[in-house]
Image (cartoon, rainbow, N blue to C red; front, side, top):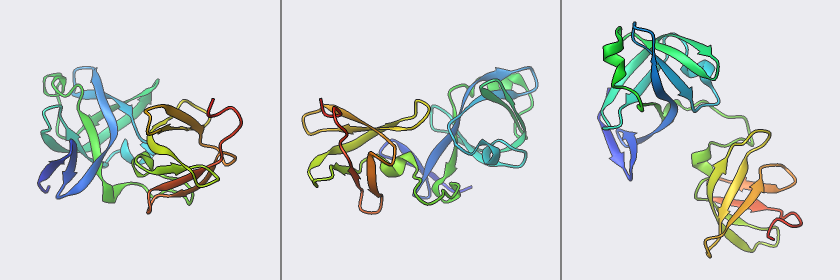
Length: 185
């Protein structure tokens, strides 16, 4: 695999950003299996036999890995990699992230966006007044919530529903929203 670079705290592969699809939270059994908390909407692409990932340790060492097997157990995946076969080899991997290069992100349907595309967008109301910058996207359940940080440092919460999010233009880093009654109180 190619060289991996750190740009502003985010790793990149030959200048291509890497995105986290899972985090190793522990070991499972004695044969080198790990427990992975999924950070992707597409676990069926990432945690299947033959899937190729980049394992990035907390020290930012990068190890190309290939999934040997994976199964969902409760809220985590139990994953084995061809590269590891004992608990001793994987114990030190706790806290490591499983990543993919930007070019291997799954295509999204029209009108859907990756969080990294939204964060940093300027947010305007339906009167074209600047409200702030989209700072974070919360994923509590039924719908996402956009956290917009104003110039004064106040966080405004907008539910990611069609009645509220009017237009998203990730190319120009701009989002237009309808401010529902009581939202700015």
